[in-house]
Length: 116
View 1 (tube, rainbow, N blue to C red):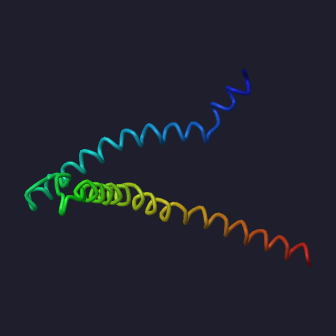
View 2: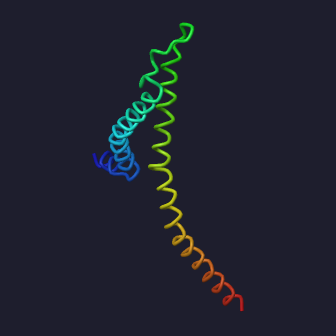
């Protein structure tokens, strides 16, 4: 039983569970945003759902709707999650790199002093 408890409390498993829950909650937000964008596109084009579009009897409308939805979801993820995360990493990763460089310099000084 102790091994199972250790497995459940591993950092990776907990992080994965949190990511899953946050992703599910974020999915609702993205779906609502996508519906809003599709309504705006529909106001421009005359129909918010392209599913009924069938030129020559080929069901192209479902594909067009899926592609537009994918592009909107990808844009929301990129601009809402990826870009802010990259900005955060750039801002705070420099401090970590500076610490590493300082340690490296001190190690070099130590090695030179030992060599004398």
